[in-house]
Image (cartoon, rainbow, N blue to C red; front, side):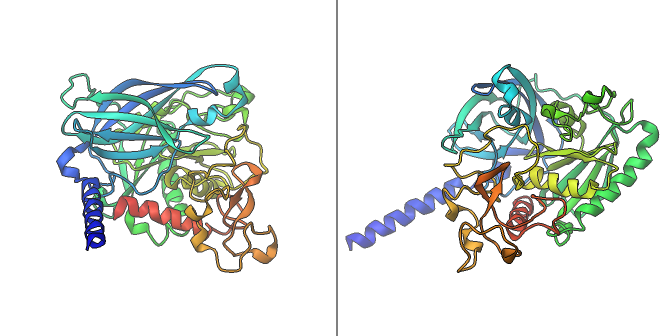
Length: 427
């Protein structure tokens, strides 16, 4: 009888914990959203975070059902707590600053990078905690915290731009859809018609590949017609400089093809009037390049033979948190991963805790590690080489769109990760 009572008591505790973990959106948040502008500063060994400002924005378009997600992605996390200490919102994210910290330059100088986050607008005062992922353990640790009072008159309510937000695809209320926003970068006013055609083209590229093709009805697509003074983008190593609305440039971290918009706040301001769960910046250039950072933005060129491949790959980073599976291309990073710790990306493993990744998708008899041989083409396994390293990191498939532009599509592991992210926003 005592054993039965102990089990029953344990079940009650687990049930109570489960119920307490559930967060009802309307209990804590309005229908609007709040943008938190931060500055991350430091070098390869130290970092600090500073509050740059708060900005009121209309319509929280993100999830209202999964305010505490069951996945743990990102180099950082933002958590919201009530006055009683209850966690009511959590979201992981990455940043260009985190990438820069792994470059040789970060061991020589200190730098600061902007980073803007969107949260549902709280009804009552909340405590915000920004956490960093510790490389040696893979665990998140608090880095910076502050209070937000929704009645604070210093919360900026200016309309930051008057750019037109065009509805490209509408499948229903934002609270149940993934709201993808395209942003025009390096398009003059007289090039807006080209931009509209580019948006249609890029949306077509995305929904032409699985799993987006089958899940098209779970997306809304918007286009911000953000006008630049000049056409194109900066190419610093060719002494080409353009006055553009998002201040994008090639040669990020001294890599020719790495195209980014380093001032993240500028990009966030451009989408401030649009429903927004995911951002893709279309840069008006034919030069090859792009970039994608989880819960930050995806970005790529408009007119290149590989424009579709770059869109699909970079959106895999920025939307689904997928890691790079290649290991033989030039990158700026040094020792991005600790080989004794599982990467947080769902499609990479060091085999430190493979059971927490896609081991359940590996057929019986498939060797782990899996030989990089054609005999295993089409087989889910653990192929050595990925995450910018030929040794110690493993990917799920011989080839995938997260490894090369020539792959036919996403591997089953990446496909499942994308589906999971779509469900996070829609179910």
